[in-house]
Image (cartoon, rainbow, N blue to C red; front, side):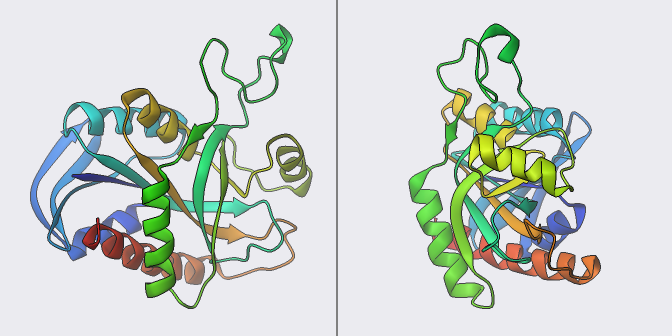
Length: 230
């Protein structure tokens, strides 16, 4: 069974409309919709914003539902000029840009006393997602690269440049690396999927309502196609 974590309520609604919901389980103020999508068993949930919500949600998917894989969908800001608004980034790995133990001699992003602070996405899930995205979302481009997360909304170019310099990320957001770390600790394959909401240099603009509509449409298509071929 695949656990799908959505960052937006509208995205969860879009998936719910395409799935057969068999039951709803409420845990930690979150609603987990269990059923089938494209004929395959899934659990769909909106985790809420930020790393703590995301980690709690992932742990519930592990403990309560015993999921075999986790896919996290949502939006992110671009860290590379070649990635345009509406394009999709698939995680190769993920880390947290707001972890700072430099006072103890660690580099930025390193979690003290953990074997790794960079959590690698499942290569099979990533390959499947790329194939499916190119098939069903031919109007956008898909990239594979590092997702960088933190409990900060990153909007200014100076901060984006700092994150790029230290972490070489493709996009930045607020949940993915927490989901990645929790999945890693539980031995669950994962993938983060992000639709890009703004350019790295803020040179391009799009009406947010229009972006959101298209992002949800692309995400629902991608998730449905992925689950169908899982």
